[in-house]
Image (cartoon, rainbow, N blue to C red; front, side):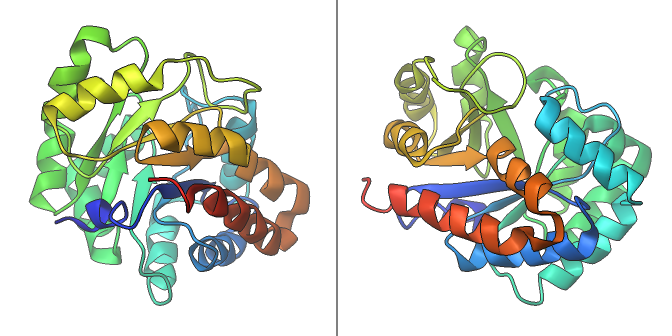
Length: 259
């Protein structure tokens, strides 16, 4: 069993997203450590990119702050190596195809595996165009995480059958960001996934409250939160780790009693 799959073996998983380098790399390290200490089951680490097409204004802002502050892919690899000295839970990179392609897919995946990354999410790579990245991931023991959106419809079964690690279910159309309500029929998407694979699935995009997290995790295997955490980091800057930790503890508590 992959380390990512193991993150889903003790009840519903809580998965925070953190942009590396926002506000700086040292603070990112402390935030990740606080997330792990407060109940995160798996952590998505964003490698900043100048044109993050799937992201709303909150995470776009984090990307800009990180890049302006000098965050680079190489520095982030070094950062993960440092984090791995204290953090044992699975971690995956979330970034864009151009970041991996310009680095060299094979070289990127080799380095990611070497520093302790478990998987890769590329939101701008359609299922039909994933082969080159998938091959590099498989060669280096990384799971290429598949995304399924409300518009996937008759492609859901096909995507699910080839999925590895976990499946990222996109709760809403459009870009990332906090939403007051989530109306997508997640249960219907999960049903098709379950009919085609035993790979766990977690729901992201728009979740910000414990109630939303519980509702989405009740219908799936876990909840993913990004923009709400990035807002806390934007608000508190270098003092963010303890505030992010408290938020994650609250969110994880909401999932503990679900089956």
